[in-house]
Image (cartoon, one colour):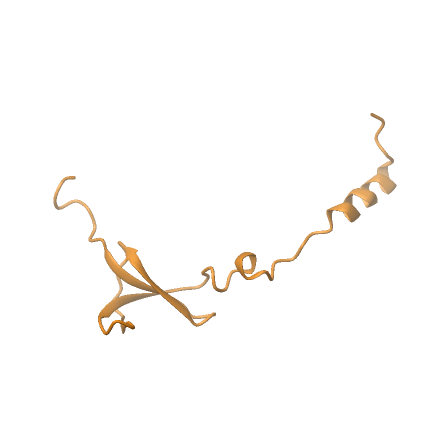
Length: 83
């Protein structure tokens, strides 16, 4: 790896404000804001809009589409297809 051309890679706290969830990981993102983590150290914090704690797909709140009803409606409108 060449020196001096890569961004600094270190621990960062990502905080999901909507869900009140935060997690510590490593990233190249930086922030002026800091937060004291559970281990007593201070880390930069990045606020995110959506994480696995608030995304509908991961929380189970995603809507299930009625594909069978759509197919039946299509067949009623246009007739069944001969195979």
